Image 1 (tube, helix red, strand yellow):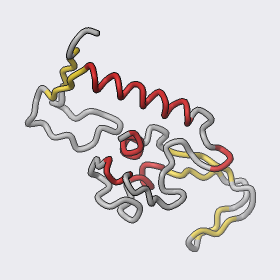
Image 2: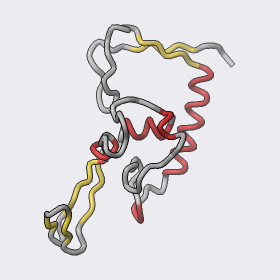
Image 3: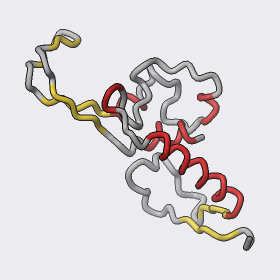
Image 4: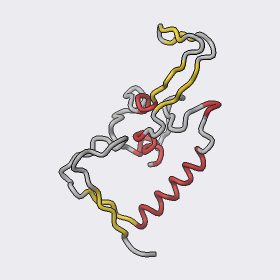
Length: 134
């Protein structure tokens, strides 16, 4: 669930790098010194990387066969986020207690939820209630 959530939300929506040498990519030349932006959302929502990418499907991670460079919520390589493991641990603990103790209901069930990534659609209100006091 956490990997799918990270894939769909792409909180770090882009990665900036600077070309240290002239690089040729798909017939284009990126000159040394140019700054390049990799838009992770485009990578995470590419149908060549994930079937039905707009669908929230945690089961896609059951048999994890992702290609290198197609799952980048924390970057990659030498610039991988140093807080990756702590963040995953915090997400796991939060999700555990949230699901045990709270109920999240959509107040307007007629409102579609096309994508939660950056903004909430108009008419999509939520009601959060404590299931029980512990």
